[in-house]
Length: 109
Ligand SMILES: [Zn+2]
Image 1 (spheres, rainbow, N blue to C red):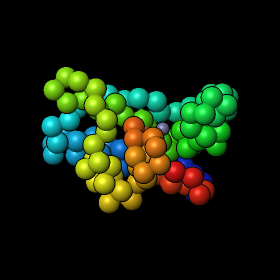
Image 2: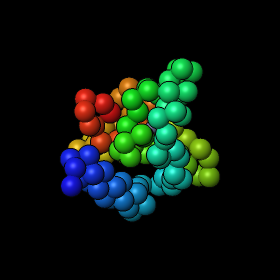
Image 3: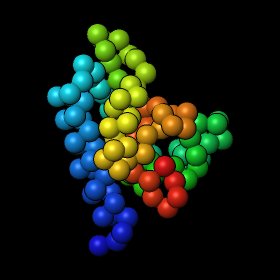
């Protein structure tokens, strides 16, 4: 099995734990945002200044999450981003993309 597939499996399990953490330990609720992205979509986004051409979404190593509190869409909370980082993940809140939760790979986040 390739190193990438092992990382994808690790990321998928980490994401499941993140969702359980949010459900059990916070007042936030989430919906899934963008997950897998084609290289063509990533390139089109990058041309518009959204994300990067070499996005980890193309590698199945990133998930965007929409956070809600009291039925309102809110910015992703720092406490959840910090928890994700403690588990070994990378959080987009550190680089201007707060909905983005990923597992760093190949020097990308
Ligand atoms: Zn993202």
